[in-house]
Amino acid sequence: QKEVEQDPGPLSVPEGAIVSLNCTYSNSAFQYFMWYRQYSRKGPELLMYTYSSGNKEDGRFTAQVDKSSKYISLFIRDSQPSDSATYLCAIRQTGANNLFFGTGTRLTVIP
Amino acid sequence: GAVVSQHPSRVICKSGTSVKIECRSLDFQATTMFWYRQFPKQSLMLMATSNEGSKATYEQGVEKDKFLINHASLTLSTLTVTSAHPEDSSFYICSVRRGLETQYFGPGTRLLVL
Image 1 (tube, rainbow over the protein chains, first blue to last red):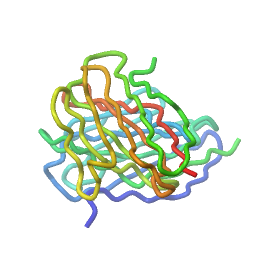
Image 2: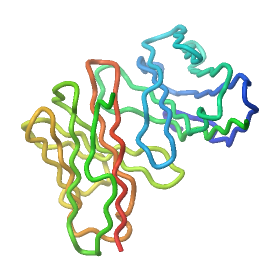
Image 3: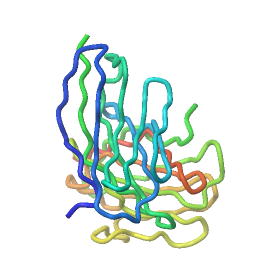
Image 4: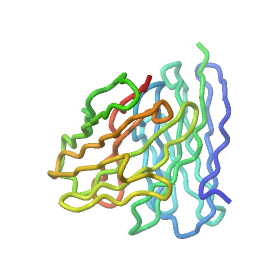
């Protein structure tokens, strides 16, 4: 079983839609949860990070962690064409170096 | 602004040559840097963890003699792909961790070996 599972999509939505991106993970010891956005031929850009459970909001982006279900989500409100990219979830265990990535979900926001 | 820089952004070389990629932490001193590789339409795979002043730690299946890592200062780590072959063509990305939580990535270096 992979440490992190993520639906690769692709996902296409109209401009202005609410986007929901999700990952599941297998190890309850994971404590750090991150979402990255990666444009084509660029390095990943850190969007959000959360520690342990709960919600975190930053502008149009909301990250949620449900540790009981081992489920993390990223919501994008009022999606824009510039949000078109691949979104990667990443998780890490306290004290560990390795960051486990999901496969990434390719999102296209259609004007 | 950018937290991590990489140079070069793209390199094309002949098979058998060696290529050096630099990674710089711009905002803070990084005792640990990470090197990843990403093939088209795939996620990032950790190759090695670069520790300042000591030997790098390589992930299983990554040849340490082929991918030489030098972390000579708190802001610079280099990855040298020795005797590169076409199968080494990939997108190489370095990363630095700030504190316990956040990890930032460089813009990546695209290597094409002919």
